[in-house]
Length: 263
Image 1 (tube, rainbow, N blue to C red):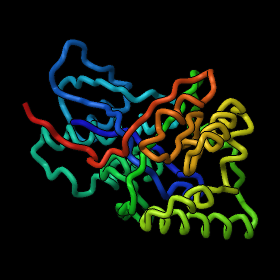
Image 2 (cartoon, one colour; image 1 turned 90 degrees about the vertical axis):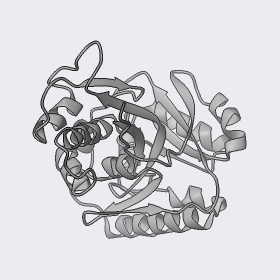
Image 3 (spheres, rainbow, N blue to C red; image 1 turned 180 degrees about the vertical axis):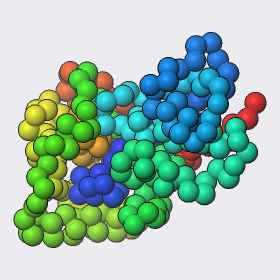
Image 4 (tube, rainbow, N blue to C red; image 1 turned 135 degrees about the vertical axis):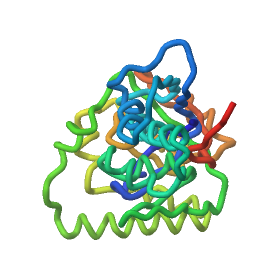
């Protein structure tokens, strides 16, 4: 099983938008060192009736807002379905969402590309122009559950309306290929400011990406990583402008979602 990482929220699309990233987690039934039973891929595998050892290789950093747990759970569920000769895609989003707690990361890892997800449904957003991704990954981790505790139980009506408008604008701009609108489309009033307040280095990286010419930048998932849409021709230049204290990666949007490769 080969499953891409993801970056969720895209600023305004809290729990509803995500993009699959061209780094991957892989699981198989062969290898040198079986993964422990506490690994999210193994737990997902067992929850779906998988038997025997599972071997995991991952290029996705855990605890950095890059969808590690979502990719692992998708991979484990898919592995169990392959082992049990069950349908591979039917109900996979629902099962992965139940384990992950929210659908955006797992939807991107399952489908690839940029996705919108709500009401148990996921739709790929057709992109009107080629986009690259630059990700800045700091050395520190963030626990998603603790990051969510920073968020209020209620928000002002004006803030809710602001985000609805920006998320709609973002999806339309992606589909139209209107890169001039992407920055406005990723503006947010629901979650980013509260989360960025405790990771000022991530805030500096986000600002640096925009100053260097990124079309848009956002806190990836619950952070602390930052991701940006960029002109692929300028990706290396923008990555080089990001601050110390983390590593910058130039990535492609993963067009293919979770896949099975049989030996």
